[in-house]
Length: 156
Image (cartoon, rainbow, N blue to C red; front, side):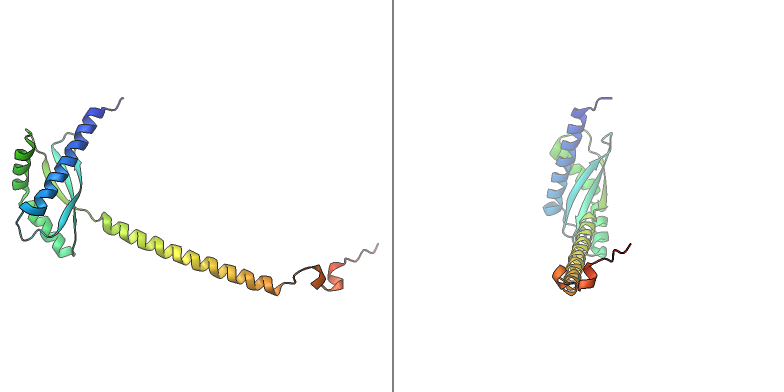
């Protein structure tokens, strides 16, 4: 079945517009003291366009995240009304705010990968040092071998 690119393009444009508008509202228009510094990282529209999940990155501790989420949920009606006026659309999707913790996971993964890389470098250096000490302990060539070691007895 062919993909309907026009619908997908419209959906992507709508999601980007919602992200921009909600971000600008969060920066200056929402005066709820519960809303701490936060920004919208992504907007995912449902296939029918009736609902949208808004992923919000909140800089702060878990308590600030809960307060900000409560403040955004309380301002949901105001945000939808403002979006209706600004976008001039007939229908604005139902908004669901979700905390986006992917940046924390990315930081943790980067930290763990860096740690593994440092351990791999240390291990490689340790193996190289061991190989070097073992090579120094071995005889260098046939001249260093005892006379009997290089000859084989061939008796019939």
